[in-house]
Image 1 (spheres, rainbow, N blue to C red):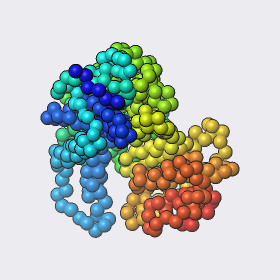
Image 2 (cartoon, helix red, strand yellow):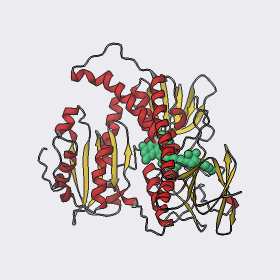
Image 3 (cartoon, rainbow, N blue to C red):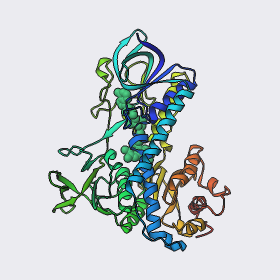
Image 4 (cartoon, protein in one colour):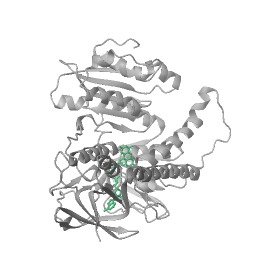
Length: 475
Ligand SMILES: Cc1cc2nc3c(=O)[nH]c(=O)nc-3n(C[C@H](O)[C@H](O)[C@H](O)COP(=O)(O)OP(=O)(O)OC[C@H]3O[C@@H](n4cnc5c(N)ncnc54)[C@H](O)[C@@H]3O)c2cc1C
């Protein structure tokens, strides 16, 4: 017997579980199906983000940053330690606890909001009168029927051709978050967010880390000034980079992994490492979804085709998050999930793609919102720039972390903020002020005239806004 719902959500990552909660808040009978299993085979909702993405990576970044501080910076504060040691198993255990707290939190939220949770794989069975039949294969086999279906099945790591992930020596993000002992030599292919974050964790713990990047330049999506400053800091810390590297072979048949590649000058090189993290992007996941059963349209890259409102080609079927176009970010998935639930309820859900913040949780942190200086030039927009270094900020000096700066880009005529780019301490937190400002179409002067607490890193934001008008007070 089929169970009837108003909304069935397939996938319980940030896109899916948030959509399910919002739909339930709006008064719908909602089911959410998620197949992720914890190490005991039980449910582990939260998707990539909670299990092998945002949350566990930040847990390991925090642990390894503590170690780095204790090893290299506590001395500046007069604190000395003998026999500093890193217990990797304990660090990974703590990370697993943090993940489980998040899994359990989502199950609690489902109960609180009366979302029916089904642990298993959801797939389209057929279109029926006024909706769709979804088969659940898992702990129990069920059939659900709903007028509205939200697909939020996320993404998987892209493997290098000819070098499948074995999660022992050739690692995706999953294996990279489960390394049991510090590898003496670690290779990373891809210098994007995941490669930089994972490379930083293991470099801090003692690995010699080499990052091979196919592109000729570093962090092409970031503002050039920010990318330059960050690269300088990472190289100073000991991360090695090779840009313009064209990989020809990855050989894991021996004890470690040997990567053959041509460098930017076209010279053949080899790199021998104990483990290799491959972080060259992610592919949309529709494995097991059975889109053919109902004629759900995918594009040539396997993404579900949606319009600006996340509507698919089928009436009542929506798709959100990593499985559709747009940035693969948890907060983008969440915003789309909320907007779709509201649209189903006849409301006007909205996602502003122009104000989605980007964050890289390395040290220094990197965060930005809006357009970069190179984009503004390419778009032919007349702009003013203002920049303020953390070196001139009292709180940053007290923290002992003065790397980087805040940079404002504002329209030359109207002074409207067009982009804010931060490299430095707590950039991930500071960027929120810029997002709010841009959502409210603020000018640089608006921020410059607002009282910011002293001493705080946010004063660097105010000063960068003042710098647009060439009137910084502390620099
Ligand atoms: C190492 C790493 C670090 C990251 N760090 C950040 C960060 O700091 N900030 C950020 O914003 N983003 C980060 N991301 C990206 C972020 O994790 C994704 O953008 C986000 O998880 C996408 O959410 P989603 O709901 O679309 O998909 P997912 O989180 O991938 O969730 C999809 C869920 O659907 C389930 N599923 C799939 N198919 C089916 C099916 N047929 N039936 C039932 N269940 C199914 C999957 O098991 C999974 O649980 C990171 C990613 C990685 C890999």
